[in-house]
Image (cartoon, rainbow, N blue to C red; front, side, top):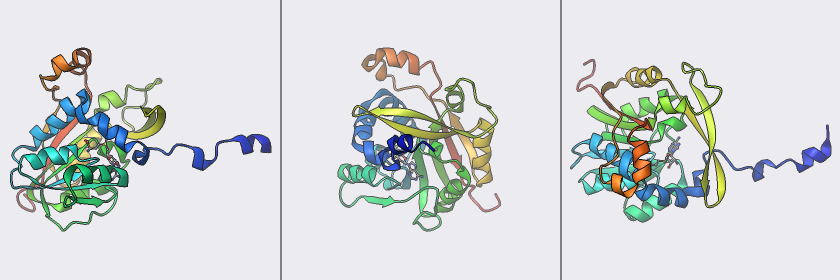
Length: 252
Ligand SMILES: C[S@@+](CC[C@H](N)C(=O)[O-])C[C@H]1O[C@@H](n2cnc3c(N)ncnc32)[C@H](O)[C@@H]1O
């Protein structure tokens, strides 16, 4: 073994960690606030698909710094947020106030809520961080009451499968990584892509009925604010949005 080279190699502690929201929480949150993709496309679409949430108990699963939580709260919902990143939750708390109902939890595991605790679950741009959607969707199904709805957005598979050369096997669920740039540093991110049929089957296997599959347009107001990016986004696939529902009655 060449010990000099081994010594020079970056130590584990020096290597940036994958999906390390702790290290770029504030920068991500600031960028997400009013940019085209989040502020004028993904978030308004989630709000629209969530429908009338006034008086509803809503779980924002993977709430980040809480922009969607805030938007739903403004529409009269009682929103609870969970996220795996303490830094993102801290930003959410600053935005939403000390009494906000926010929990540190990993969506890969059991959630700290009773069966049927929510009427609606929203999960914006989170599921694609998870290799296996099964346990997560089973938990989201558990915490929704009969007739409850889950609204979820993910990277569109048609985009996720065309990012690489050579093109990956469309029928295999695989991970891919690329760097996000924040504060002059590169942050390695890892996502999981699935073919469309694997996504729909994951929802139905968890006991949901698919009620809408949406490829929305950005908000019209963005045309003047971001003319060039708007032209691209309004003519490309970007994210895919699902609305799925728990049957009204068991065995329905
Ligand atoms: C792209 S951000 C989206 C944040 C927010 N939903 C929004 O749309 O503004 C993804 C969020 O998912 C969270 N996340 C990723 N994996 C998670 C997991 N396994 N459990 C809970 N949260 C997770 C991250 O910490 C991050 O806050």
